[in-house]
Length: 216
Image (spheres, rainbow, N blue to C red):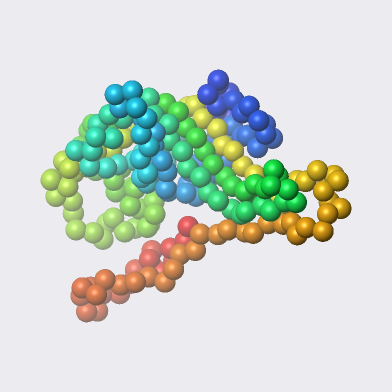
């Protein structure tokens, strides 16, 4: 497998070429850092976008939802676009034109497939939970048959796509640096708050390490 994804007509950057990246490891790192994604697809000739959670296993990404979901049923064996984005900061320049954001994003294209084998689907749902909270799945009530029947898992090979990143300060026109206007970066970070226990937790149930130590 090549270390980079091929440049295609859909993934070629038309502007700001320096922000584009086709390196697999860079793409993997962004996918692993941001579980929230949006999946775009077409139903009856009209575009739809659905937010959901994704997880990566090797060179594939997966997402899940209700087996009755119209979005998932229409995405199966269909062309989809999956995108994740991380906002790292607001970039304030000396002109409106040069305001920007520091960010990391990945956009993938391909044909979604349904995970058909029940044992494989069960394993992938377990890995989904453990990807976010290592070791949690084995502590949970075992899935009922109906739980698995009601859940669909779709996957997408990471074969066509690209990452796009921006970092650093504003890039103003030379003359604008002489203007008495404040410019700079307002960093943005995702912060995980203190855990809020369910009031119906049984007495004596301790908070597990994968909750206490959770980080994005």
